[in-house]
Image 1 (cartoon, rainbow, N blue to C red):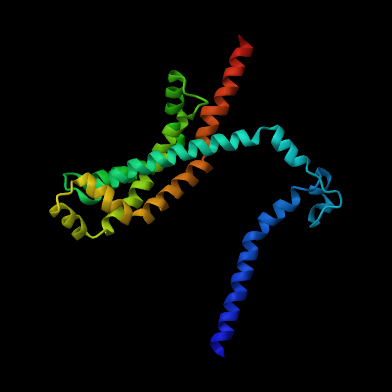
Image 2 (image 1 turned 45 degrees about the horizontal axis):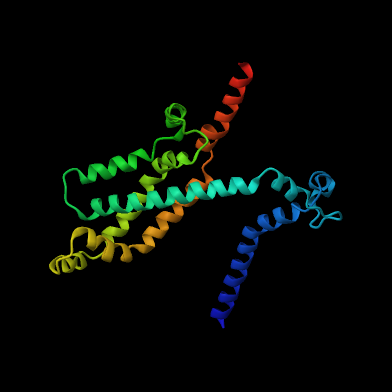
Length: 229
C-alpha cells in the first residue's frame, strides 16, 4: 500500500515536471496565432485569442524562412558527417594504437575546445574573405574545428570500453586494423557514435557567432562598400 502511494506521488511529480517543461512551447504556439495588439498589454495573458490570425506565419514565409532552414540543415548535416568520420578515426587511434605522446595529443585536442570563439573569429573571417568563401557552405569547416574535440573525447571513452579480446581474435583470424575497426569496433561503438553525432548536429545548428560574422556581416560590409564606391 505504501509503495503504491509512493508510485502515485512520483507519477504526479513527473507529470507536473513535464507540464512545466512543455508549457513554454504550448504558450509560444498559442501566442503565434494572436495579432500584434494582443501579444502585449492587458490581453497578453489570455490563453486563446479572440481574433486568431496567421499573419506571423505569412511573414515567416515571405522572409524565406524555409530557405534558411534548408541551409542550416545542409551545413549541420555536412559538418556532422565529416566530424563523426574524422573523430571516429582519431578516437580509435588514440584509444587502441600505441604511439609516443598519445596522452599529450588527447590533452591538446581537449585544450583546443577551451579557446573562446571570439579569439578565432577574426582570423577565420580574414581567411574566408581572401578565399572568397564567405556566405557559402564552407562555413562547415570552422564549425568542424569547434565540434571535433568534443566528439573525439566522447568516442575515445567508448572505444576504450570495447573489449580488446575481440580485436585480438580478429587479428588472429588475419583481419587488418582497418577491417577490425570497420567490422568490429564501429558496430560495438554505435551508441557513442550516435551520441557524438547528435551533440555535433545540435552544436552546429545552434551556433550563431560564426554564421553572423561570415555571412551577414560580410553582406553588410559588401553592400556598404558598394554604396560608398
